[in-house]
Image (tube, rainbow, N blue to C red):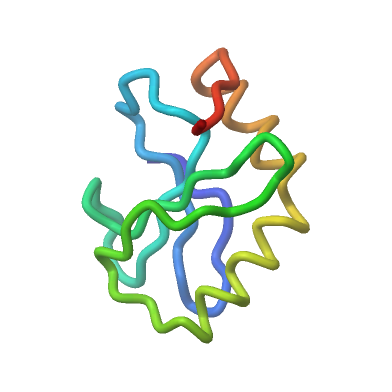
Length: 90
């Protein structure tokens, strides 16, 4: 579970067993889990909420989306390093 960032008290990370899923991140407060909030990152860098299992308030989600968009190149690079491919949600 590589942590990418800590932002607004949230841990933003990849889960290590992603089973060839499209590019996405997990977000939570506290201990990272596979069931945390999942956000797809579309090819143009747009974040798309897949699930909000961590129950992150919409005001924080908006800030996290902007943060993801700003850091999209870094996130894509780290995903490719870890998983060896870039696949996008359609």
